[in-house]
Length: 611
Image (cartoon, rainbow, N blue to C red; front, side):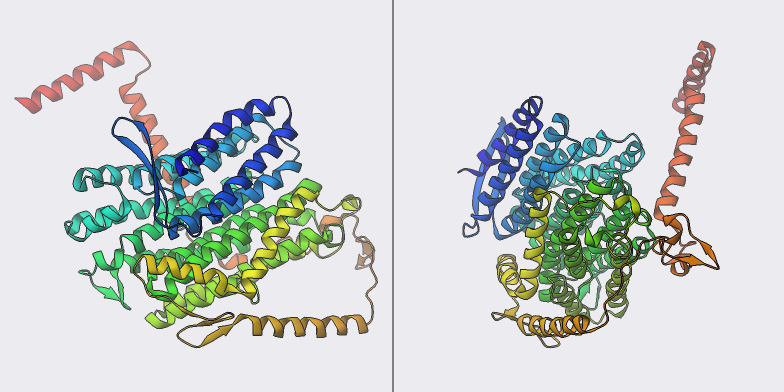
């Protein structure tokens, strides 16, 4: 089937699902999930087809170009995996609406078109389709989300205008917007043009990936978005930013076109600056995630941190950096989607996102707990989950280039992730069960199924990361890079080799030993949450006994006075608003006499200037 027809089918399905949902929400959502799974399977089955190109002419002289290269297939299959699993997850949600289904279909269409695009114009058109559809989704249910949507619009507009300017500049200068043709033209372009294009595309990539300094939209958008949409927002849509970033650094590629600039640690200056932005994003995202009390805001800042790893790795380039960055795209997509799904399932049953209002749900929702546990182990980069392999490769590149400060940022993010992922684990699932949650049940089957699939994939690629890296090697080969050495279970790198099967066996044996010790030990007695007292006085409210509230308060105090990008931009917005009020007073007076005065003043200035 032609690629353009697949995208057209996805686009046409949106209004059909909208009208179908007016008659039956359940049937419409089931059909939506079937369509998304079909699209994912179609893309997945194209794995062996390379350099297939399809065009769709929308008007005279304007064509949308789609294709399958190793790059398109990799990003497209990851993004559609997350969207298709999220579509199944949505079947059991409480708040269904035709408008929401229409927008979700458009988000999916935009994501497919963007990742299968073969030129910058097609990319920006479909990217904006997914962006504006997701924006309306965020404000659909909650009035309080309007302010956060403004942040999303503002940051998206910065990225969009930057990319549009770059696209028109490229079209005027080179006469083409095709990725490979632009890469050839960039080699002989003026140095100022190279820097301008790279900076403009870099702004777009950082804005959409949710990386510092354009990360401010993630916190509010993730926390106010519909719970079932957050996995797509974090696991899929931010990865389109990584797709553009990879086009910039590997397809164009930045390391060769900026070879005339000074280099640091074997990295060209522009890539080094980009790597530092990634490192700062890791630190900022980690610190802010530790400080959050709302579980969705916590995972949102985790996305900021992990986007930083992707930016850092791709900016570093090299064999280990490129492969580690691409592997982390896959790992974080799986883990963040699973984390958001598990928390959405908890919210579905409890009706709250505040960790201090939960606790002890492991006994009521054990499968949801297992999905969250595997996801956080992967995010923290702990073997034998898949997150370890990508972070290990990124460390290899940092060691090879001799970059201690960036290595510290990457290491800080890994250590800090232990703190922030542990917080929901203990606050939501461990501890004692709240009295109001004694009748809570496990999530519905349609929620458990996609969480379980993502969990199993995380485990599979943790045990056999070589399975994923073998295809990533094809991407690196396609872009002219050097492949990494692999065997069935071993990854051979600079400082040694990683035998994932051997390490998994060691962890399994250790788990069995620990389990035997647990069975032999004295059994704990489960008590009611209120079966306690302090200083002779009973605690009569469960909230007072919840230890996760302000769990890291001493750490939190250390960073209270950190300069905040969000606060700075909020302050700037107020200044702009005050300036607008002043201009309105000057140029749009309340009374007609004011207009006459302003007009006369303008004419006098004009006559004086022209005389």
